[in-house]
Length: 124
Image (cartoon, rainbow, N blue to C red; front, side, top):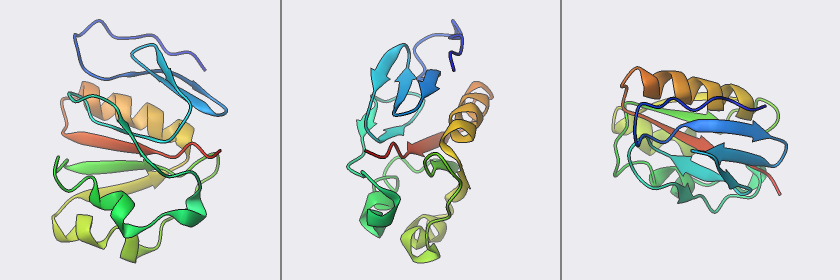
C-alpha cells in the first residue's frame, strides 16, 4: 500500500508498506525497525516473533514514549507480558496490532503530536 506523505516537516512518517518492507519518508526498510517521530530510524535486530526477548523492548525505555505500537508481523500475535514488563513499570503503554494496522496507527498518533513509538516486526 502506498500512503501519501504529509508535508508537515521532518517527522518520520510511514509512506508505504507491503510484504517484507516499510517505507519511512519514502526510504525503504526491509528489516524490523523502531520508529519515533523525531529521531533517525533504528534497525531492530528482531527477525521473528518467536525470538523476541525483553531486551528487544528495553530499547524503548530511553526515549520513553507515551505509547509503543508493536506491529507483530503479518498477523496479530501478543508478546508474553514478561517481555514488556519493564515498559509497563515505566508507565509506557503497549498496543499490539498486525504490521499494517501498526503503521496506520503510528501515523495517526504521530500526526496528533503524541509521543509515540512503533516497533515494526518484519520477519525474514
